[in-house]
Length: 313
Length: 297
Image 1 (tube, one colour):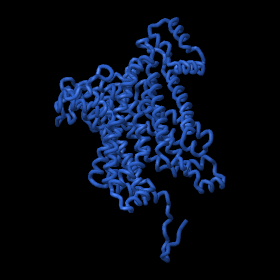
Image 2 (cartoon, rainbow over the protein chains, first blue to last red):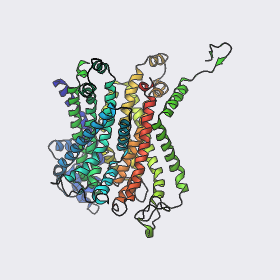
Image 3 (spheres, chains in turn purple, blue):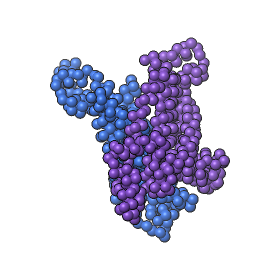
Image 4 (tube, rainbow over the protein chains, first blue to last red):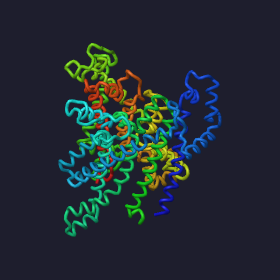
């Protein structure tokens, strides 16, 4: 197991380097001169040249990348063009908001998804199954930003239940737990649909296996067969999806945070794109991706821990 | 080859296995009610997207302030927006844009992804490792983030949206096609054509590609759904086509400011996205069921 963890850890290094190269190269895809952009349109050529010199833009790209990387390792992600503050500080203030939002959305998605998936599989080909799967298909097909707006319309500003739930959040997470509900539901619904479908498929596959037939032949109750024998094994592949969903939520938070005016990393990214504050865009994209790689690493390790069959093979 | 029928005196027509397998697929697909509904919906969208703009009587971009923010009526089925433009007309005109973005981005991602997947699976070795590690890197950007990063540097336009969403689709195709290629490559008939001296290109295009088409077709359908969701999300954020293009995501974004007075500004474009994506999702699911060998048993 330790060997596996070390190997898996080593495998993430090239991915992290690749991600950093890609994020670094974003700067070169921008039309125009980055130094000019930082200095502003009205800046004199001398100022632009000074900035270029300061940022090392006159150096060859590989050398620039190495400098960029060594700065990242030291926690320096550059400075925001707009505020002049270090990007790392800007992100630090918002990092936990996004992580918390994604975390709650994952819990909601897992909770609803698992229950719906299990019910669907246990009662497969009945009306409950068909209804759950249709709802899941809708959940899968719905843009979460539209769903969020509809929730605001219904529960916060509209005529159905006006002001039932506060939807605006000035900064970070406040004391009012109600504020968390709408964004979390918005973000988590699509994931719940995916987990429900995955759980159902996985359960149905397990239920068809020999050991389940043996358990039934031994005269075990249906409840014991399903919950003690089938579910345990059916949940193993679902874990991978949960990890991916958490990552998806980190990315999807860009839209949810914009709709609910939540000051997380997603909204910071969008604001930075609008003001062409590229160091911030680079920083947030890099941090979210690194976090995603890390979560996937944890998922892989827990998958390995739970799935004994891999060891046997 | 003409086969002699067991019934003396009659001659059976030669059977083309590929045509037969498509016929089988069609038969199974027709039996799947959800797939039929999805397919019909896609057909309706296609027809409405192509000929709809010629049938609408109103200009999708002409402001008529005197009738702004009107609710649904016989004259304006989906109401009017903040500039008095007919929302139904804009939705019909936007259908073509949604389809263009969906189809072209998936075509772009599909072509690159399938090529990389086949090359990776067929040649294996270092090339496989390099290609798959690059795919891992692209997959390390969760959700909409990769497309967002690309479109943020390229700037907001329909073409850039297609490029961004296309690149976002590449790894999904590459991974699936690589897996299928690996299993097909090991089959004996590939060794046989190799022994006959067929070139790599011939083996790839004539013998491997047709046999990995099933997962590609399913993936193409499902990815159109994902692509449309991603593209509408980016347009919602203002990173798609510039106004007044009647792109559904952009319409949602514009309507957001008037949600309290006129919720229909947000309701209808959103519902259209849901229906469009749903159609491709259920058709894709049906296709997968029809093409899955496990389901054929």
